[in-house]
Amino acid sequence: MHSFSKRRSLISLGITLLALLALSTGFVFKTNATHAAAITSSDHPSLDAGRQALPANDGWASATTGTTGGSAAAAANIYTVTTRAQLVQALGGDNKGTDATPKIIYVKGSIYGNQDNTGKMLTCADYALNGYTLQAYLAAYDPAVWGRTAKPSGPLEDARHASETNQGTYVQIYIPSNTTIIGIGDEARIIGANFMVKSVDNVIIRNLSFENASDCFPQWDPTDGATGNWNSAFDNLSVLNNATHVWVDHNTFTDAKQPDSSEPTYFGRIYEQHDGECDITKGADLVTVSWNRFLDHDKTMLIGSSDSSTVDTGKLRVTIHHNEFENVLERLPRVRFGQVHVYNNYYNEGKSPDFIYALGVGVSSQIYAQNNYYQLPSTIPAGNIIGYYKGTAIHTEGDLVNGKPVDLLAAYNAINTPTLSGDVSWTPQYHLHIDPTQLVPFFVEIYAGTGRPLTQNF
Image (cartoon, rainbow, N blue to C red; front, side, top):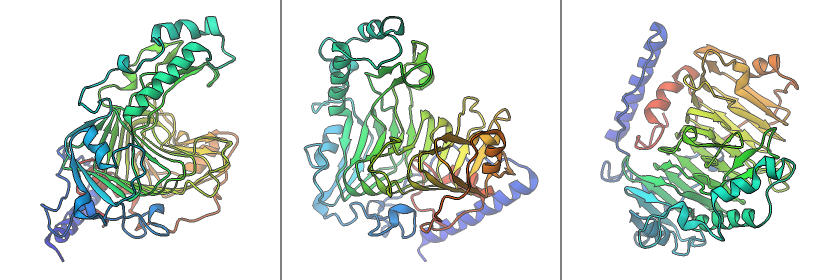
């Protein structure tokens, strides 16, 4: 056994003993905030993280052909990038995601989406077209002027859409098939960009801090909900349009210096400039989301974007395991259509009084949730962990809420109508193992997120 493997085994044994001691004494164990450096070939010659493939049986992305990313890359197709322009060039140069040559891309430092090819930082004013201004938009579509029965239309809405599309040509970065993108150390950041994994196969994204994918031009929709809403484009990471075999691992997602709480309010609603942190939609399939941290956000992870989709049936098979959700309010995840396995995640929401729900049961969804640990404010009942969005069933088992065993489905059904069935008509086959729920917070806090060791499957 290699010395690193021995150290990892000893560390995991020590963590287990500490966890058991904490449980027996009531002691609350917290990890130090300092992150360990990510594993690279310089740390251990036989373990080059850029060439690591998804292990067998590690979630849906390991099914059929598995997920190897750029692990077969020739030396000429291994890059280290420090700017947006360098990243786009390494991905093929045209920012269309069509170069399927196996490639490994190491990200060093910060990549800014709102930056042109010369390195100039771009502002919202640089993207505005056709006379768009927020002031004019607010005046035109104020419900007192426009009403509440139709979405905005006309020249100003067209200008808003054109401006948003213009911003998208910079901030949306398309990832081709057979690609691994991996951050170096604990300082690799993707700021203000939207990674697009669209209509491709075999992609690995690891050890990156995704920060503040902000839309300069949100759309007002007075018909969205009872009082209307602002809706934005640009997720931090979008997996969509029949993309398959995607592994999202050891990343951190956050709104960083632009939290929703800092946004102004227009028409009685927060001016929402953020979309999802990691959305999986439009026929995407065979995805594993593991050991990530999702922080300080509202609508976090959407799986399936439309109740009326004609492309999602039999798709959207996703595994979500050993992630930390902290101070995030909803969609953890919200699911339509997919067979989604949600296990061994830590919902660290004890200081989130605005928490809405974790598991959104949407149309034709088949969520199989097990051994998740939920920390909630004392004012929020366990029945709120499940959210109803026109689905009919969810399987839950082995969960702890604030340290106590809870049957989440029973807790939901006790306070909600319509009630939900526990029969989702499938059982997960692809998982390495299921950790005891009481150990989940300890493992996840130590190993999840950017800059943590990239091998921790005990």
